[in-house]
Amino acid sequence: MRILSKLILKLFGWKVIGTMPEDVKKCIMVEAPHTSNYDFVLGRLAFYQLGIDVKFLIKKELFKFPLGGLLRAMGGIAVDRGKKNNMVDYVADIFNKTEELVVVVTPEGTRKYNSHWKKGFYHIAAKANVPILLGFIDYKRKEGGIGPRIIPSGDYEADFRIIEDFYKDKTACNPEMFNLSPMYRDKNKTI
Image 1 (cartoon, rainbow, N blue to C red):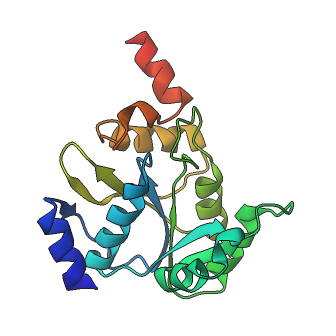
Image 2: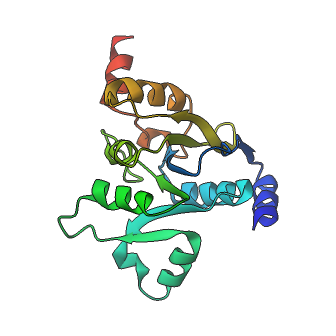
């Protein structure tokens, strides 16, 4: 898959930037911006090219035939969003039971415009004591890959400023649908 992914991305003019740090065996991988179904395809191809076995959380309803087997093979972890589950505890527990695990999360939670990023990715990383790696897709530059590592300090707002600074120049497939957070939006209003 690695060579095939590289060829497909090259054919469409995309370049993969960055690498997985060798000392990271477990992490939350943020993937943003997320405004199109193409984001999943490009991100998955980039992870294949980088040789990273990623997992992703997806609603259990999609694990029925015929998609179920394919989703599992691609790294899907079924989650029941209908029950009153504590997703942070659930995913942190999965981290605690494994030696190596990279879970990709799209904190926007939807491909549509969302005025607030979900904070669960941050709380999972903090509870599981794993770093957050900033994965990205930039349609303007036709680049995707891995950016900096964030170690959750417990100060969400301070850590999120670092995250915002990284993503503020990334161009989404549908830029009008991409929003970093209220903090970023409010900062831009005062400029």
